[in-house]
Amino acid sequence: MPLHDPAHAFVPYPDVPVRHASTGPLSGLYFGVKDLFDIAGYPTGGGNPLLLAMSGIKTTTAPTVQKLLDAGAALAGKTVTDELAFSMNGNNAHFGAPINGAAPDRITGGSSSGSASAVSSRLCDFALGTDTGGSVRAPASHCGLYGIRPTHGRVSLESALALCHSYDTCGWFARDVATFARVGDVLLDADSTPLPLQPRLLSPTDVWGLIAPEVLPAWDGALAKVTAVYGDAAPVSVALENFETMYWSFRYIQGREAWMTDGAFIERYAPVLGPGVKERFAWSKEVTDEQVLTAQAFRTRFRKHLADILGSDGVLVMPTMPDIAPLRTTDEAALEDYRNHAVQMLCMAGLSGFPQISLPLASRNGAPLGLSLLGPAGSDKSLIAMAQKIATATV
Image 1 (cartoon, rainbow, N blue to C red):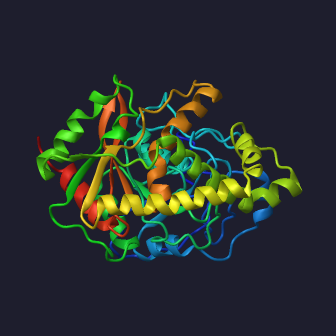
Image 2: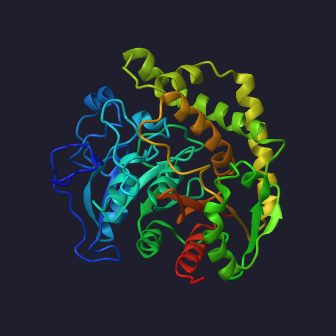
């Protein structure tokens, strides 16, 4: 970790030399790694002291981290994660709450809290995170960063602690779109569904309808930039049945898989879990087989529903989060309400497995707010190219 970490973004492990290539496309850049990924010479703590104590020092490095090292990037350190990656608040009861470099009085969001904090606080150039239910997209929006949830399975999560195998993805953060794209060139192969130069923009009016009226004008300037480059977005409705059904379908699958991943550890060792995380695991344990089967059938239908809407050239333009980050003083109950509201919007990418990028193009009350592009499966690099054009557009 850096000798000076005013943002409390890094896990305070002793520094271990990690070799990287002397030249390459990422030469000169420093990066952080969420403490779910194995790095030779370090333990992998997953945001939980008992899991950290059981980890031991790893002897191999996760392939995705190794790709970045081989491309010339230098490791800045391992970053704080919300406990067992099962939160979106960015406050770990054991390791603290990293500081939001763009809005220090507000939460970073999680669970990739330390990674977003490190980049927004300029302690490194980019950072790896994971996104299961929004754990890259939420902190990207809150901290004024570019962040991506890739197509499910596109970036390797080998040698990384899991939460929910059918939702987990590996994403990254950067402050500027050029660095963001350089990382994408290293981690992503050619798109299986490349978008045309003039994609078909779609505005999901039902998603925008989830936003409070006083918040909506904050995106006007961002939308003007998108329109200047790609023209107007056609209105479309994307929810299948309703947002409540989508929300619960996502949650039931997430809960079952989270319990399958960590339930044995929790029941055997009874670790002290922080507020919110403890309750979510308790709830997850009670999810029934019937609820899971119904949710899985819905997910199959929703994926086809959204694929039909997008085709091979459609891109949704929508808010990443319902609002700017809550204040750090917000109580746990209010944070849970905010999280549940956000999941209604975030669950579309999770249920479908499609890629979504958050762009730091908006703000409100002096705090950042992200605008998202969501495209068909395998369009990740095309979405990054769109982000580059939009970011450099003048209105």
